[in-house]
Length: 430
Image 1 (cartoon, rainbow, N blue to C red):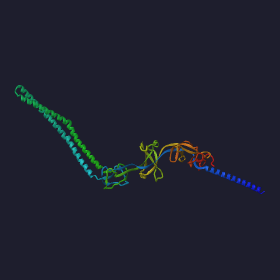
Image 2: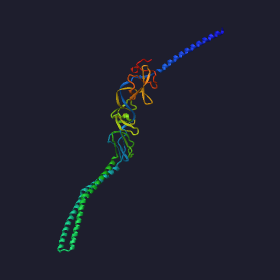
Image 3: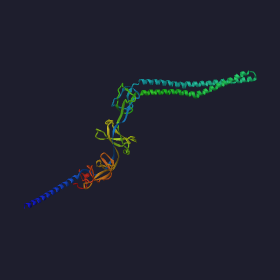
Image 4: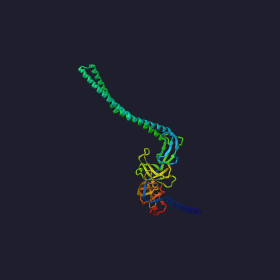
């Protein structure tokens, strides 16, 4: 009887234990199902692609440079006599800035002036007196030789006649003939000398005298240039930015003594890819973000290099920034944005919605009616800092994840946060 009672108790204990274990399993399974379902609903932000204009933007960093700069270097080494401007002064083109000691140079210039005057006087004497006198003398020699020749011919003929008549010795006739030959030679020589004076000597003497004048003029020009080098003038309108020397110090040739910058406008020089620069035009709009100034400043494209930089194969583009009040400073590091061509009715999404792949392709996560996301490949066009043009892959009817989609797998259940029509999935969200 006691053994039967123990067996019944053991069977009841086994039943109770089995029921307890079953309840625990059921409660645990239900708890696990609920946690899995909750973990699958990932909170994201989403919106429909928008339609509207979008403009290509080219962005680059640059350093502001002056519109023009002149580091004025003296051509001579000399002490500074006087300085007429201070650093920061506004100057005009042609304004005298610095004078150097030049008394030795002025002396050389005066000496050159004297040499020129002497050369000019010699030229006048040569062309107006010497050359005519030489020509006149040569002509007189010809006339005299011609007269002597005629006398010698008559004498020779007369003596020849007397010799034939027997009234004169043969020796006297021979002497007269010889005198005629000598007179003929003298006449021929005088004619040649006259021709030489007229054709050669006259011209060469004039050229030699003219050459002396030209040489003297050249020395005077050089001396006057040396004097002018002692006066340093501004080649541009601008502001004095550097003036390292003081009166009495020696300004060395080839070393800047004063620097002028035209800061009425500044230039941001960008180096951008050839493809990006292909559609730019001079006069195009741009913006420059300057540190310390909240709003970007308007600028224009002022130069597009016709050649590629040989080192980087990029195109140099200049942006001109008006600076009439001197508000912006040369040397400031800035960020520039050039506005290119505009697509008037483009499908576009926030840049954060684009998911790049390792192979260079791009995709987005599209939220379905069941609140499950599916990855869809897209082809993109214009990129800006915050927007991207979508060429294909999605339409304005699709709901695209814009925040929280990074790392989500295809088929993940999401909960779209926010309110408004742009976040509507077209169905209910549990």
